[in-house]
Image 1 (cartoon, rainbow, N blue to C red):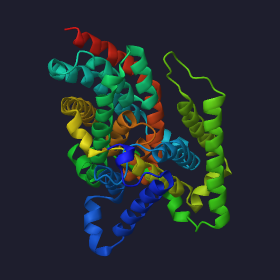
Image 2 (cartoon, rainbow, N blue to C red):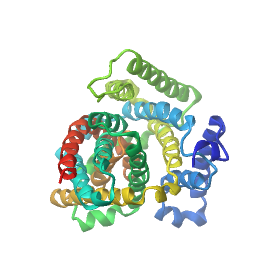
Image 3 (cartoon, one colour):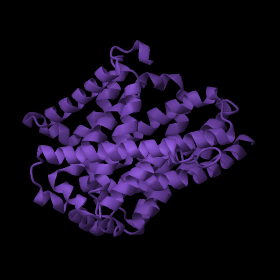
Length: 398
């Protein structure tokens, strides 16, 4: 479904429709008779899936300048508001488990790609390995690494087309599953005999501000939103105009610089009195920006795309399954809670736009953990993607 075929295409009207869809979801979640339904399928799941259904039905397009605008601005705004409220020393108390779960997810992507290619290679084009290599960059670090690996291996535009379908349908489909599983984290933790003592202690400390919240006034909201927009605008301006891309092909792009700047400034300000803005709901305003961003992510996923590249999609499912197997094994060995599993997986597969959303659904106060893990994914993505590309080339040569 391209943009010209959709019913609503004008960017402002499209943004209004997505905002209205999010409002409808949360309004229905407050209806008492629907309480049980939204316990099983939390509102944030519908914030993703409802726009996807709208795109599949032809009401919204799968690509639009509105989505690009939302990604460009809502992400840094959300990250800044989340970062200034974070208790970084408390997060660091989580220890090596978060890092090890993240690395397990990365290893699963590196191994899963060559295995999927070995299984489906005979019915795929000869240059499929190059497309898979680009996808490995996306599934370890994000779009910037996707482009970097694509240029590095010389993937053609013709092979990138179905790969983007896999990235969207399988990658965001897995995100939907993780959101759904949030309702069952206690069962998972019991099954795996997870040691939740550390994460419970950190979560209590990070959530303690809820006990001292006060209603936000107009000046409070003006300060929070104004600061977030100004810092985001400066970060985008500096990242795209003053800081050079790094790597050949590009590893650190202007967008990556903007995210790193916003996160760094936000973390630095979290050690000042600005952290008290959490008392008036700074992080909640950040979550609103994230959930609006999530609607645009869902709207990009057209279910019609599933029939366009069935073999590629099947390979993508196998690839994700191997990634999940690696993470489950590590979670079992470490007795890691489902939160670490979900945040570590989405830090790889989804990046900074998705990891804090998933983390916040599991434990709202822990969204910054997802952000920091995703930033690590940026760093690992180029190296892991190049390693995966080399393994893919070996499989393709067999």
